[in-house]
Length: 483
Ligand code: ATP
Ligand code: MG
Ligand code: MG
Ligand code: MG
Image (cartoon, rainbow, N blue to C red; front, side):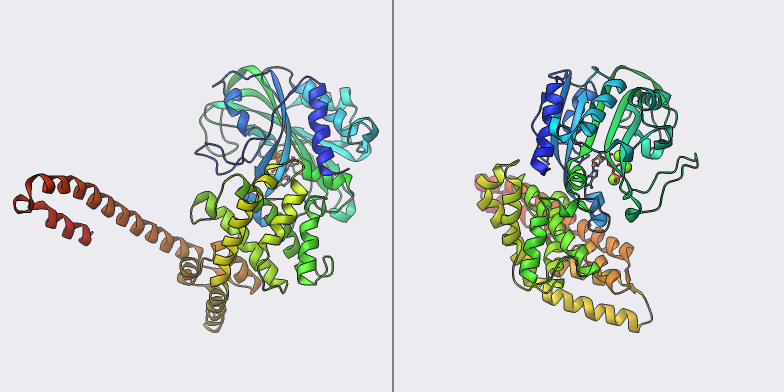
């Protein structure tokens, strides 16, 4: 089953069950706490927080998501993308646990010929929060999942919360046992341990918002203030993970919308995916990051040195370096942009209509990086050599800073290059230098601002009264220079 079909079936299923279909929001929302939308519920936050009335009691969407936290997992686990599509169904005080569990199970197990995903029930597992007897009872008695495949998990993995005070509540996941090829068998010791993530792979998470949380520290240490007046549902199912299952491929990078980028990288490099484990990680990183890059540029992000732009820059520069490690020296981002746009356009037609702009941004960033990559790599090699011959395994922070500042090497690129040579990096030293630079820049900007602002004021004074009566101007100029 193709990804576009999986996506459509999800929306159709919930629409048939009375949900309003809501299009994906942009990856960029006006939320100071969030660089990118990282879950399907994000655009619905005001309704869950009671800040605005929901336009309908229930909704469904397939939301574009970017999770930079997962960047280091990409290509190494079988299931983590930086960009992925989270399908979700939402109830704003309408149905609760019973409805959410039944609707999810129905879609997952209904035969493909009847609009479902047709997964084999005998390999499906579920998890519930340790105290959530209600969910346990629904899975076991109503749905018929045997007790041996329902796991009670602790607060860390299976309790969700947002804001203080804000809604919180237990979660329940649907996992699939992909067999011994992906990890050891899980034997429940009753200690709340999570089963292995690649073997017992979670693909759907159901959140039951039922309580109000109070002040506290961290993800788990907070009091429950009471019950919410209206209980709500937020679920998230990873489209790529379901695609991997239904397409019988071992990881998300080999699903129909991502594998074509690997094929392009094979073509450009003349190397074959599947021939070498280290190369394979590079192929998967390229495919994943190319797609994330295109989707981010599509939503208006441009590469830069701060915040969102910096994340995009890291992704794109990592592609460029990975393809060079596969033996390709020429620019490639234009080629990948085309492949990603072709694959994704049926769900995201703006990738076609906006193609020229996206393509230009991708190519410009590659050109900028290629201009400094070789000299930066030489500096890195010399520094690595010196580190080793000095009897150390830690690259100095000032080298990482120089690579960042002069050659545009994002820190995680330096970290990755160091790790490949068995070295670490003095990250603290690097961050100190970065902070110093930032402070210098701030001071400069402040000086310019003061100078400029005051100069304008004085200039108008100057215009009115002529230069002879004016004394503050030169003083101010010299002051600005000193700062
Ligand atoms: P995992 O434990 O595997 O990292 P998660 O618990 O972080 O997943 P949730 O935050 O519960 O994931 O997100 C809901 C669903 O979104 C997951 O069940 C999964 O199907 C999908 N998902 C989450 N992160 C990713 C990712 N990096 N790439 C692809 N799909 C993802
Ligand atoms: Mg995760
Ligand atoms: Mg999880
Ligand atoms: Mg989860």
